[in-house]
Image 1 (cartoon, rainbow, N blue to C red):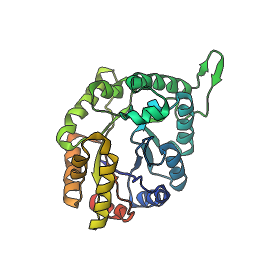
Image 2 (cartoon, one colour):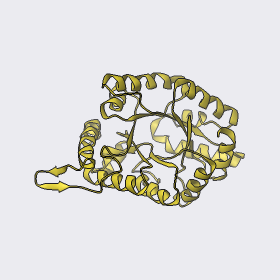
Image 3 (spheres, rainbow, N blue to C red):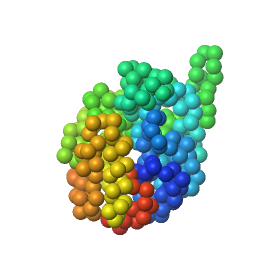
Image 4 (cartoon, rainbow, N blue to C red):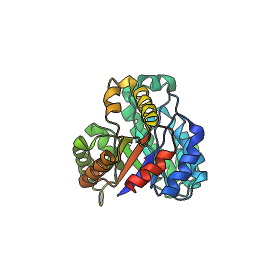
Length: 282
């Protein structure tokens, strides 16, 4: 099973160092979250910078809130990053659930699921080289494969998870091992019901921090702030794993459930966490 590293968002200027150190330590993937109305770096721009500082490690959005974006331009940005990273980019997608993000992007939160499905249909056509319309030509560059980069879908409801099989992507589960198993099953059921060969890639997430108490306190404060809107910020902070034993146990539980990769999300900005985590789990 692969282990990836979710990047902290508080200080974008440190992320090139995180990327270089994570690749050297042996992590498989770099993940980056997406929000609009928040003090976080834009993920496609950031991962493009990190692609230029690395050579092997995968670059993954977790998840890009697609309905906030215009689909033709998004298709071009994604294909460009895919090509320039040598096919290392993985497009994790979700519909988002923040009213303020949709207000700022002038999009309707009530139609976000339908909008993302329409976006995917158009992007897949454009990546394959089709014309945008009868009166408008193709939009390049071509991605490394005609179907575009690997897709991952985040979500909790059956309709959201069914995109895994419908669009031929993997599943990204932001859930604790205690209740992630049913979500994994739904993703596999979607895959088989749509006649897909093999099985979907399953990626799990854990919020973690390793280090002295000031590092733990900073990470906890960041989690509380990020999830403040949800009404469950305290639960998210309390669920953050802060010891090697707890992190190792959770990874083992995900492995038993059949996860292909676990992403360890860091909210503290201390880059020495990379080496601490590598020593603990790699």
